[in-house]
Length: 131
Image 1 (cartoon, rainbow, N blue to C red):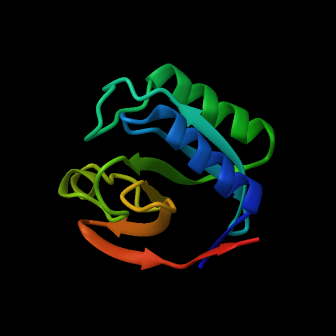
Image 2: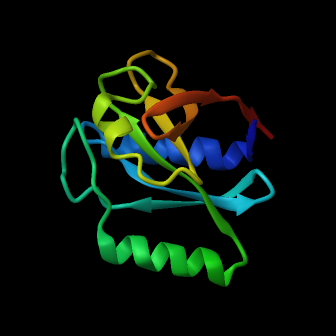
Image 3: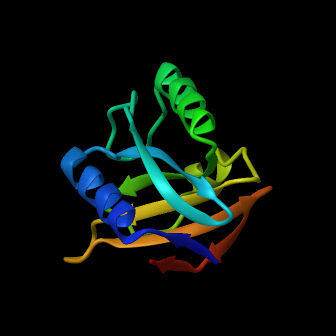
């Protein structure tokens, strides 16, 4: 299970909605399995079907999180038109087995947010507890 503060969950949903119709992306940081900080990053692919982080923003985010004593716990991205589950591309590009992958879907009236652990192509859903 992963815990996320309610205002962080709402912030990433709002951020992802603001980027529609392209996929939004970013990092989630915190400690001891509790997400307390979020970072929105530019999707340099500018695509509704895939994303790539801006490398300069990615580096600055990791540096900022570390300076605050936080760990990168997850990355997040949105699926503007598909369900909140990893696509084949998401699975193929999930290189870091130490983080979670959050997906926010806008296919329903209420955005759907789910988290996954992806290791060597194996996907496991992780329960999210909103604090």
